[in-house]
Image (tube, rainbow, N blue to C red; front, side, top):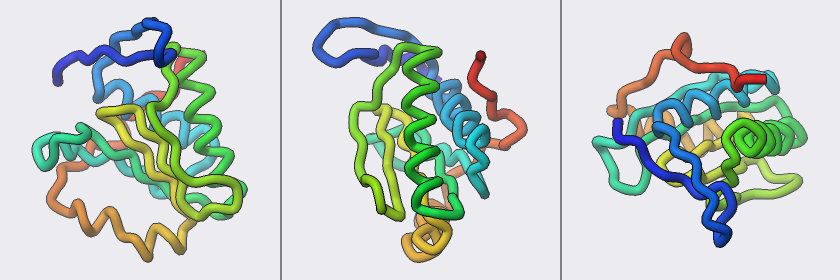
Length: 138
């Protein structure tokens, strides 16, 4: 994978270089720290041009969906100086999307994950083994 520059603070010119696979692994690690369920990293880089990886996870409640998304933001800001390019979903939402450019995290309430079935939509995208996911450094 190519190393890409990410803007830690949009408009302020601060940059942090991180490989997109390492970024996906750090996102997955942050999800696991907050007890996210059924965490999957999909390599969609050969299937689309808008991202390299999806990190998809389930949560048992809407409150946990929000907590996981917040923890992803906090962890990546603290460890790498990164802020998401976009954030979709809010309190009371059953699906929150956290966009870091080439890595997009989808955090679902379990029923919403089944309904939207991103895993099925991207069935032909290779999965990155979860044993390769890294907990963010503390």
